[in-house]
Length: 452
Image: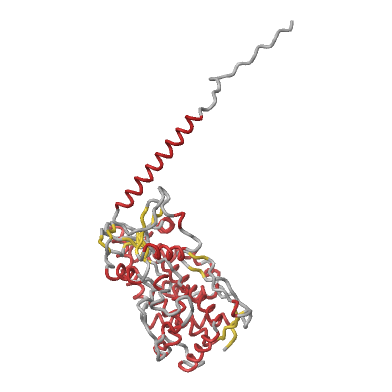
């Protein structure tokens, strides 16, 4: 027998259309609460006695207002609007930016004892864990920096022995460049090997051939040097106040290799590229080398006093290349009245280097490569307080002396032995960097090393 089907009944409560007035009320309430929260945030932000700056958004701060492809331009635009001292928020964290020579000098030199703490940068903190000499804090940094300076001096820093190692490496560099036989060459690898080998000669008391497999995988050998460095301090584990543990020594070794290799290598690459673009500079350099040193004698650091033009070129390369435009962040280790503002203990400080190195009051053509920036009317070398590519104050680069020696001897030795020839029209050489942020990396290029 066929029966009519039983109608299906919906499971659960019956469907009701959304009340448009209820939705609107909820949305308005959410907006009111959001605006109220923003108002409280801004009032708290304005009550502080920090320097002025753009109003931050809740949670994300001023991140959306920064052009991370060109941070230097962003920081300069903000300085034009808010002055040489202003505050940014990275998330909820305030950061005070110092833009210009006067405020940077006041902070890092005049009040250097307060501004010598290291600022927090998550990308660096995740890597270093607060160890080593660059990113450590407080008493740990004092002990490790003192130890590093003492060790470098013991290994010859500032003495004739370290100069001999740089001279030896410069001659090895020349021999490697001869093997290119004047053909177009990318100098990145070779120029990276030379300063790295100087650090190796200091720490390992030996250098590596440029084609040595172990040298090419240097990072795999770092563990060995860390063990060597830790041996003199193996009683230190019983000293509760000591910072000389294996992890600190490991990171200090990494700091020395990274700072002692990449910065010098990048400056050399920038320098050769700038010389290619300005052949008149190369001609003046080689005239001074021929007159003071000649074709056969090995260049010495004492020659620098008789070679003002080469010295000026090296300084101008460092100024113009602007390798660390933002500097490494500092922090204040106590509450401090800084000009008319109050900086709480722990406030991160960015003492920017690029506005100092590109200051138009000190350098007549700051955006132009011009060795005359470091020469007086009589052609003598002229010092400048604005020259601070290694930063300044108590946190300045501890390898500054070695780097300056390397740059002078490497540049002089290369141009004593070779004439640099561009691949193509020198007028078309671009100085545009591959990356602009915490560091400026020179673009890739080729050149010919023609025997001089």
